[in-house]
Image (cartoon, rainbow, N blue to C red; front, side):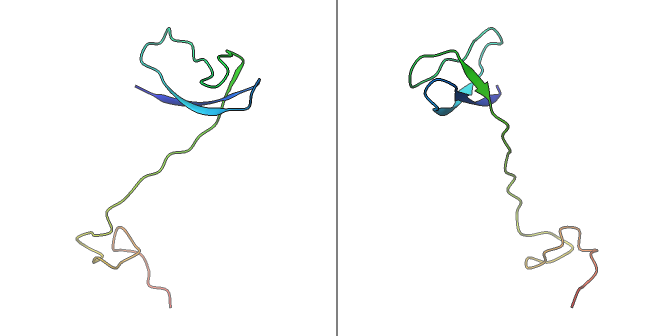
Length: 69
């Protein structure tokens, strides 16, 4: 189920909307308006800092990066 971020054009509230059904239409949680603008959002990825080839303190995830110095 995707989560979308919207900004209300009437009151300015920015909120997330969990789309459960494709037929759902998001409504502002602040003022109830349907006058919304979908926002571009990014996502974060958390990577484990340990790997088998580069060691736990390596900043190179593959272990094959050249050493700068």
